[in-house]
Image (tube, rainbow, N blue to C red; front, top):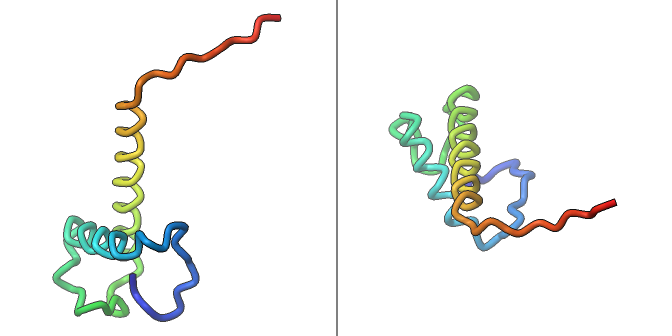
Length: 81
């Protein structure tokens, strides 16, 4: 991820490299990867950065929902009154 005034900390610090790659994959998908010079995002508009973040969130939700759908249904117990 970028440097500078970053206040957000990853819950799993070992995922830093994967998240960095994921961000650039989403920037490419959104169509702004060619505007990024190295690791500097300072000249990218807030709207475009938000589009990258939104694409990241959508992809993470999609992957989580797919993992839920692929799990075996758990048996639930009902409490009878």
